[in-house]
Picture 1: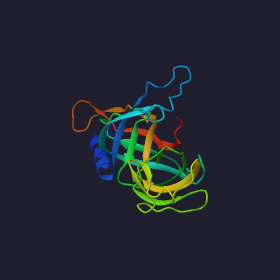
Picture 2: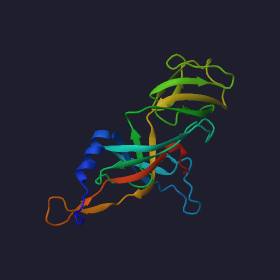
Picture 3: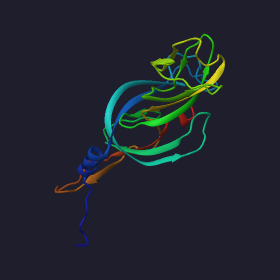
Picture 4: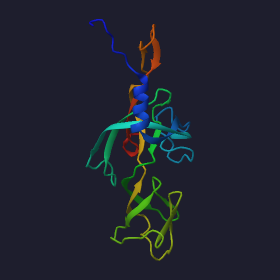
Length: 220
């Protein structure tokens, strides 16, 4: 019995991912040409990118998410959650650095400060699924559909006489689908040779694992 070999079964991992994995949406990333070759910084006025990255395509896949880290502390003003996770998925899911992963089956609360500039539309950073609260510097609370509406993240005020003061910040809290960015790849390319009920070894690609972080916490 000393020479008996216990072989890896790829089908077991595939079943685990399909049964226990989240349904996720993948958007692939590419650096925007607006990034300066001298400073490495994107053009803040570029209409084609988000902080130097463009996203394209949409692919739904299954991934097992684990190792969540969420500390209650302040990152930037209005951002109250620090988090990262490990994500394992099938070998045929091609992932790249800074790719965006959206968990459409979950909701988290996001808070941010928004500057209300005179003559410019105020805009949420993310698509709100449910509005929780919006208050201005005077402590006045505003109600969605009564005091303001939102379309494509742009805020439209219903009554100009009843809106936050210009050139001042207001705070907003809302629920959104968690958005993660792929930040590192400890097990991006993995494979093994399996000799299970075969006379010769068979090559199999193994599931891949990436580390992800909540998008607004990734330095750009």
